[in-house]
Length: 398
Ligand SMILES: Cc1cc2nc3c(=O)[nH]c(=O)nc-3n(C[C@H](O)[C@H](O)[C@H](O)COP(=O)(O)OP(=O)(O)OC[C@H]3O[C@@H](n4cnc5c(N)ncnc54)[C@H](O)[C@@H]3O)c2cc1C
Image 1 (tube, rainbow, N blue to C red):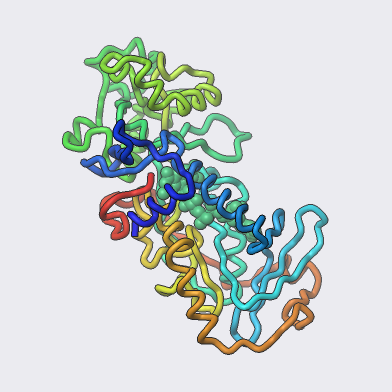
Image 2 (image 1 turned 45 degrees about the vertical axis):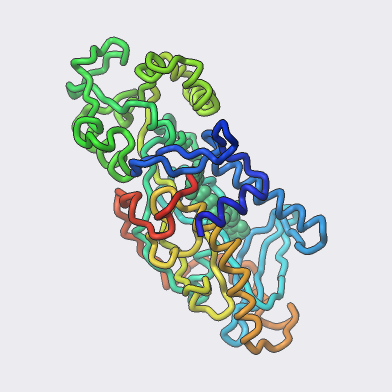
């Protein structure tokens, strides 16, 4: 499946890195000791998004897809036990709109924002999943959360999200903290002998490329011991000095120039001269609405794709495979399974005049005293090893 996904994305025009001879290049990644990750510099996800958008817009232009941008889903309409449409709010006019359908496909992302600050956009607020849940859709594995080790630490009270620095930086950056708790000297005044390269020491075969959960847990442990750096003490260094000495600044710039530029813009610190500071942050989730192998929830006709679903058993989205699982759902699973559902189900004709589409005023979407069923989250702080997911046995999209 992963090979098909990469081929499909290449056909969409995603500029994956290539070797001199023209073949797609691979690099190593956290949790893997072989180079098996396809990548587009430090922007793989962004490039995949652009590829998907351009293909979607092509279909819009061809008249095969109608787009309704700037709408917020408020409710799933269920008629005779089948999902038959949605109610949305037009975010420009504020009006409610109803849309009838033969089936509903939710692709509304995960709930990493339950941690308050995460690497997700603020609009990824799990409201659509919650509405489906209130309509009876099951929720599964909410404790499965991925914490990413290389995020820019919290730096103020007014920020709405955290910024991810690509995992690829750990290919060349060395993670360290001062050996002595409470050492507040600037990094360049701390001699080698007083630095603790704790990942290299504890995990010599993986070094700085340990899986994300291991890197995250260890960074927190170091900070809990008082060895964290920066103003808050909730950060560790990611240092490129040795890589620059070994390969030259130009090579490092070529590999990570865009990331270093972004880091400098946000923190006003030059990572070629002063080590980056990083700290783990909530990144994406593996729990979500329960689905069967056809990606249908327990609500007949309600399909859930991508990060919004629980990924069969959660583990399919481990490591760096969130995008790959989402792409598999959208490109290779749903085109077949939804057809099977539509062909094999009786659905009476309905229009949006049906009473199920008529809310009793805004209160029905935003009741002042919501009574259950509420979801209870017990979230583990750390995530899981990047090596076990079945769907990235062969390769991963990073
Ligand atoms: C910074 C960052 C970097 C990442 N890098 C990688 C990577 O390298 N590799 C990897 O595999 N994964 C990566 N991930 C994870 C991966 O990008 C996500 O898991 C994936 O994008 C989820 O796709 P999705 O389409 O399921 O949901 P999303 O991309 O989250 O899209 C959901 C959409 O639904 C909208 N929405 C939500 N609620 C409503 C509502 N009520 N009404 C209307 N719309 C709604 C949201 O606004 C959003 O546009 C990264 C994530 C982040 C945040």
